[in-house]
Length: 230
Image (cartoon, rainbow, N blue to C red; front, side):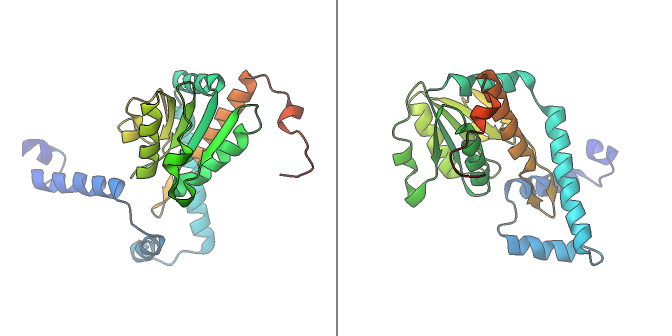
C-alpha cells in the first residue's frame, strides 16, 4: 500500500490495473486494421490532416531507428554474421507482417553464393519446406509479439535436426529466443498502434552488408547483371 501511494496511486489495485493494461496492449494488440483506425479517430481530440498523420508515422519510424542504433549489441551482431557465413544452407521464415522482412532478407542473401531458402508455407507446407534442414544449416526466424505459431513450429523442427538458429525478435523473453544460437533485438516505433518495419529492414540490410563484407564480395559481383533491373 505504502509503495503504491509513494508513486501517486490511491492503492495497490490502481497501480496493478495500470500495469495490467500496459501488458494487455503489448501482448494482445488490436486484432484488425479497421479497429485500429477507429480507435485512432476516437482518441484524437481534433481532426488530424494527412500531413500530420504522415509526420507522426515518420517520427515513430525515426525513433525506432535511433533505438536500434543505440541498443545494437555489437558482440551479438558479430555472432549472427558468423552463423550466416558458416552455414551450408540458410532457411528464412517469417509470417504475416514479418513475411515481408523475411522475403527482403532472402532477396539480399541471394546475392551471395549461399544456398538460401524462403519458408513461405505455401499451402500450409511449413513442415515439408523444413524437411531438408540439417545440422550444418542455419534457420533465421523473424517474429514479434504475439509471435507466429508457424514460426515457432519451424524452429522446433530446426532444433530437432540440431540446426543453428538466428532469431530477430523484440525481447529476450520471446519464446523464439529459447535455445537460440543468436538473438538480434529490434523494437519498432509505433504510431496509432501500427508498428513500423523500418528498423527491422535496416537491421536485415546491415546483416547482409556485414556478411558480404566478410565474404569479400565485390560490388560488381553483388550487382551482377542478368538482363533484369531491380
